[in-house]
Length: 117
Image 1 (cartoon, rainbow, N blue to C red):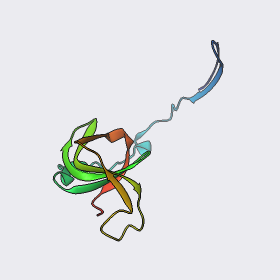
Image 2 (cartoon, helix red, strand yellow):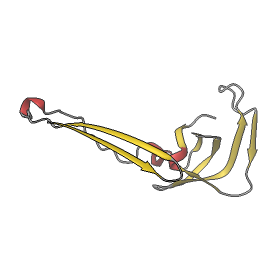
Image 3 (tube, helix red, strand yellow):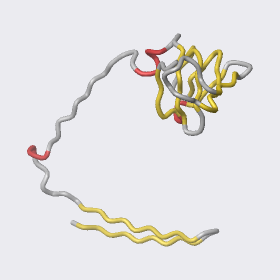
Image 4 (cartoon, rainbow, N blue to C red):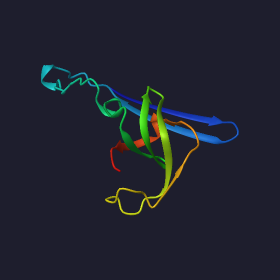
């Protein structure tokens, strides 16, 4: 079965949407998919609690001691914003400036993280 939908909306702007859908009536056990599901406790950011971490985020790079983690934020103490990295192998950043207090970073903004320097 094939379904087609067309929508047109007019407000402050003009929007046009087109949707195509296909219903699969041929489902059987041969079409089932096996997936690897593995649950590991204390993995990711939680495993780095107490460590000096580097967070590569959407706009900035943050570094500091990871002292808190929840679904929405991570908390850094002794945090710095890295404005210029220089080479990554030396133990110091080319330009990293300290923030005056504890610093919270949204987990949604974190692209990658780890222990770097």
